[in-house]
Amino acid sequence: MDASEALGTLWAEAGSVAVLTGAGISTDSGIADFRGPNGLWTRNPAAQAMFDIRAYLRDPEVRRAAWANRRANPAWTAQPNAGHLALAALQRAGRVDALMTQNIDGLHQRAGAADVLELHGTMWEVLCLDCDRRWPTPEILARDEDDPACTACGGILKTATISFGQALDRAVLEAAVQATQRADLLVAVGTSLQVNPVAGLAGLADRLAIVNAEETPYDDDAELVVRGSISQVLTAVADAVG
Ligand code: NAD
Ligand code: ZN
Image (cartoon, rainbow, N blue to C red):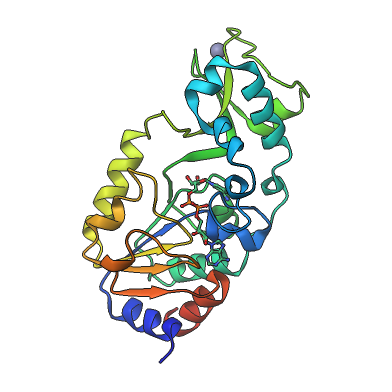
């Protein structure tokens, strides 16, 4: 039995399954991850400043870089890949009880998944850090400004995503904790499991399976670690279980 088959068996036998995804599930859609071999931070460690709220608030240069990076993000036109589609199919078949993601690209929803818990927010919305007003991101990008300000109060705008130094949405995090504790099996897919609090979900799971190309700090806690391509592994599982 290969590792994909073993995951299919584990998945089929579990009473309820929660899935946690990370940037690795979207690399086959042409969106780079952060810490993989071709990751944004692997190639350019200085890019991390764009994802630190203190730097973002303090330094207009960082905001300009962050907006330029957003504008250039392939996610605006990316299509869901076989991994996203397999998870949506498994959910429709009643084999995914909770779908949680650290991704901000909206590709799970585009693939047809419902009730996605977006732990790190979404790049498809912008919010004013002063007055909390929200806009669809394409509207703000259409203004074609390098550091757009809030039209209502002049405050600093940022995509509705969680940067380092920012707290996660309490309700979303609480829902994810409960979903993980309720599930018999947590499957972590395409995440390096290096950043808390989300990585900590892996420690709350009754049984844990990991699908990732590289090692994670939770590999020793997992009952099964699958090292293959996410698209291929999840397609095989959906065929076997869905
Ligand atoms: P990460 O970059 O830390 O780790 C991704 C992991 O996925 C790596 O270990 C890599 O080896 C693995 N991987 C990549 N492609 C794979 C493939 N096709 N098959 C198997 N494994 C593959 O990602 P993370 O743990 O999600 O943390 C990064 C943070 O960055 C998250 O908070 C997320 O919000 C954000 N992010 C999101 C996106 C997105 O929305 N698509 C993209 C980049 C970063
Ligand atoms: Zn405002």
